[in-house]
Image (tube, rainbow, N blue to C red; front, side, top):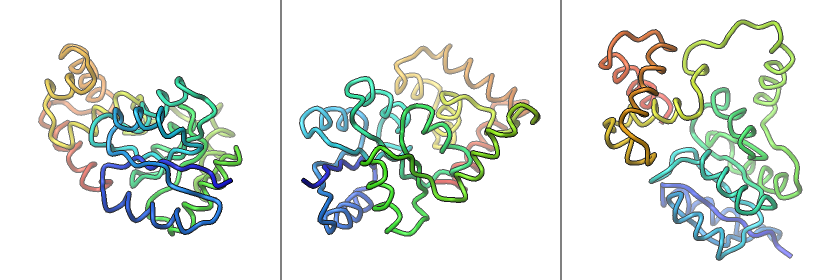
Length: 215
């Protein structure tokens, strides 16, 4: 039987394009599409996918949190991250929360099909260059210096940083996370400290530049 694949991405054209590519494969079928985390969880429960292809940036919520929710609901469902964000920053984070693979949208379309098949079979999928980088980081972890820059941010801090770059206010970020303004402000302070930024305006500028560069 064909593996059931669900697509979670906030861009309709990207969802449709990927759905067409997947549907052309005899061993794969698309069982649903979603634009945000809430819609995706409802669809997971009704469509019962074998593999969920998830973007990092969603209409509401984010891909890493969604992967954790999917695993908590049914850990037999396998997840693959397909995103524009840099592998060096997100691939390890994706694997850490339970995804079986990470692939950048800049890779050729046929790679996403290969990735879906690998994840369907329970294998970890990373493009060769990303796998080599992650292996190098693991091997050198005992002796390397502490991470600096954006890579040093925690998953939650990185998401706050991304949302700041998208122009969301502290109140809007707090509403999205269902947390207090105080909690978000604490994240912002930690981000500024790690990135050596002295003012809130500096944080806003750097975050906007990062989003413009990486989408």
